[in-house]
Length: 112
Length: 198
Image 1 (cartoon, one colour):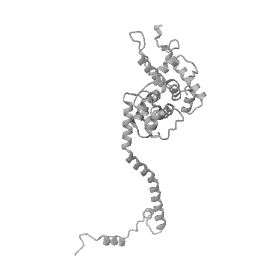
Image 2 (tube, chains in turn red, purple):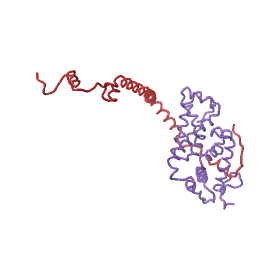
Image 3 (cartoon, each protein chain N blue to C red):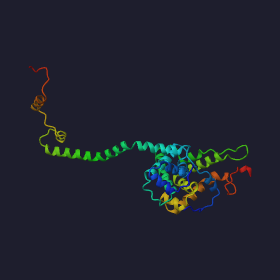
Image 4 (cartoon, rainbow over the protein chains, first blue to last red):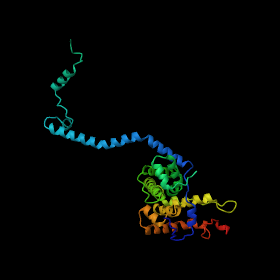
């Protein structure tokens, strides 16, 4: 595969060939092994990360779809577009009292 | 101790999880990868990172390696692409502050020893730094053809350019290096002697 064509047969060519770096700092193979080992130990977090990255666009699309569906269903009734998208009920004095009665009141005004 | 096993044999063993076989491949081709990474980036952390990353990527693609090109060419190809990526990011960071001409002018000349000859190590470092002063394209060709002893065809394949481009870039690179390096060469035989020793 190696040919030895010399396009110029240039006098500085031997100098260049002699200057070729031949190795990294001692212990290179050990450092490569250490990195491989570290990568193997890191397999589960990486797999989770990969799956999470795949799920994110789907989850975002589903959220948008749900918000659009909510907004479309409540576009006339809700006080704002955000309320509609989040499917929040309109807040009135009556609904506030209704919520208080739903969870039970702990206020000091309440008498036994 | 290096074994006499063929690359194909070591790759097959590495595929089945034999770390020792993979280690032998690393030892066997460390020189080729170092010549590319250090030749392109200079000695230092970037070159070391590229060297490690080259073998890590090779390990990840052991199953995909079909042996269509030699393992050396395959590894040098990865190392060259990674080195060019590093140079691109370096260029984005530093090009505005340090010009290539300034970097090249920073090459200290080898000093004469008491014997009247240049220290071989110093001279090699000088030559490498001179190569480092070349543009990326010219440097890549010098690294592949001179440091790696790749054929013009192999260099063209690795760089994704026509063979004629490799030859013209090499010719221009040698022309650029000549004034810097020719004082250290005599007789075209690779004998390195100081000018005043003759």
